[in-house]
Length: 395
Image (cartoon, rainbow, N blue to C red; front, side, top):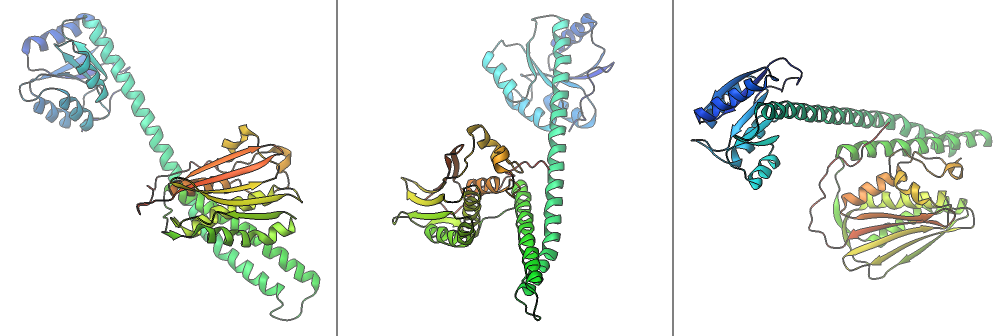
């Protein structure tokens, strides 16, 4: 593969001309000299394979290619040269004014398509300079993208590593605080029992945040794998509701379940689907004032199973719905003040649903409550959704 393109402001450009017609090659050289605007060194090769060999052995700044050679012809030459030399600009020089061929050449990587005999040396010189400049910009964009991706991977690996290391001591803190609460090692005053409860609940809250960060790190790097199995969604919904029931009672929020008896089994990850439902129910209870209610329903569509979590809470403004689906983003201004959270529940839930091949929709309005609807395919072929990095995290 040829080396990187030079700076377009360089004094001398090395040009590889792949042209088997000596007269055309001589004309190209004369036109470039005639323009006087480009300092260059022109290497003329008469065969396509010879040109490929020179590109692998020497540095060039631009390729000029005739599309009709003795040993090769047509767009496949453009494809090969652009594939093997992705950083080098390529300009096609053709004796045919063929718009279809010109378009195909550009689509396969050529920077320009010039007709032999049309335009003077200034046209070729400008085309060369512009091609090098465009290719240089393309290369800089690719390098910036690669650098950003590498930084994102490093960040995700750091988050995953730190989250894992923090979970072990936190589990110990939670376990010992539970022992204190239960007075397993002897009597304890009520004050110290309450202190133990505070330590436990604070540790559990911090552990939940760490688990969310670990999930975000895995999702962003595509490292979460779904354990797909035939799943009874009604059971998962019932489990999630029972797990949130105590919190709902404390908040004086009623939870109502409305499940279609025709709900079929779907192919899904049981733990991840329960995680999604818990996230949605937790948000619904958290942002619903005392005396309100949350409804969980499941209904069957033509090819999808719809699960909806509706609440009578404070709602979200339409313009805040998309930001609410970004990691570490909280919306709602003063109404959200005092509510603990990292803004990870909705982004994690949406991504997990998408990984199941489903859709995640939010309908909401301030003071009118929020409805989050999950639509999951009823018929799955057993394949897991492609695991591409799904979230771009800014910390």
